[in-house]
Length: 636
Image (cartoon, rainbow, N blue to C red; front, side, top):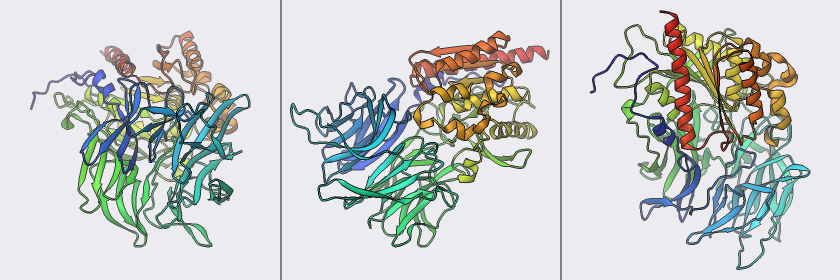
């Protein structure tokens, strides 16, 4: 063991650099399985590209399947997802640059399937009976942004002009998840209308196959009462409809029953999925009869198991050392998932269906040994109004360093985006960058986060800027009272919606020594005028009439902010445009607040390039350390 030195927390040296942390932010995004192998996408911040990888069991080897010049990423609804599907001929994918569909045959180069410059595509489903793919199409035109379900032909011939996609369904504001029955005779999809969001209210529709191969009149089979959000529809092996429905309080499987419609499958009372910000998720798979492969959240931790709904019993819990399982898939031999781990990189797992033996097909390398990693601790605490709230706490941890006697580390509070999203106890290179340097980190699942049921998620309605600020204050107070952190050395950071809450926190409380806003919302009213269609009514839901109330608009509270703030902004951000951040910076600068502003012209909403990710970490660290030195000097 190396000899530990005594260096002030917040200044611990670490061999794990910002550049290594940026590279370790590599992500496995989607997973699908077919006879031709196991396929997944990997985003690499070193290239800022997403590519499909293919694992062939007979070769026991994975290799990049996407050729140079292509990146597999959809921007439908701006957040994308569902960027590829598998067909008999090869992989159909959305190309990041032009957002068009391409077919890459098993042995060939990609060929364009669409050529509609104003359109984007996502959430594809292969239809073998008509040799087409069903997809969500997003068109940006003079009438605005239109969405529809279409089918796109795979029948390519040399020199053939591309056929226009054929409309399957249109007229609703939003569509998602076209899914076929095993016999190909029924089609499911999700719709929702403004002002609803896919986590507040959706409807499930079903259509019957016609003799010409098209689809007939469709009917709403769930969600017509307006009291549920439905997601991830599919069919089981007996051609019955199944979907995750939160009508009873959690996103749980409901299944079609003759004459009564969808009925809840009684089982684990928990959310089986988070909010569907991205398309193409899969958190459960029907197997035989009442046996399902499922994933769910328990106190914010992801679990996976073989579950029998008839017996209401877990038969075998799987991947127990992992802390999140998503994009579940099954073939004749194995169960598959993308699995997150608290101290290892995310991985693609294959679990033998007979022996339940587990294999790792690929795993993101971290460059940080397991013993160097700070392990999250689940924390529940109560607000002043006795609301129960959840967070993960990461102690400062570096095997070559230690806290001095009676020393308490500085704290960085992390606020996730959305705000209808969540934080998970999986390896996060940003968090480990801070804990390596002697900061504790609290990753907060404030009220409004997903994974804790519909009531917890929905309580943020018209309360954004109020409830999560209460939760932030209660969390900080809890950590101070339990003597886990230094009460004067507390920082707060957030991206997007999290940046909004961070700015409100420093405007309304005196807990924080410094703050960071990464492409954060500073003026909701201005944002509402320019935001994209997917979130066009979201602020009304979050704020209600109060969106014009100055008490919840950071830029109008600037006179109350004395806390130093560092801002990071992308020049290509279409969600939070750079003018909004620039205005906030100018207002604070005019009143002599200590402000830093860093603009990255080539980045969008969420930085993707490793060079910039590393630079942000170093700049933010230097900003906080400068504040810590100032605080220590003032107490001498």
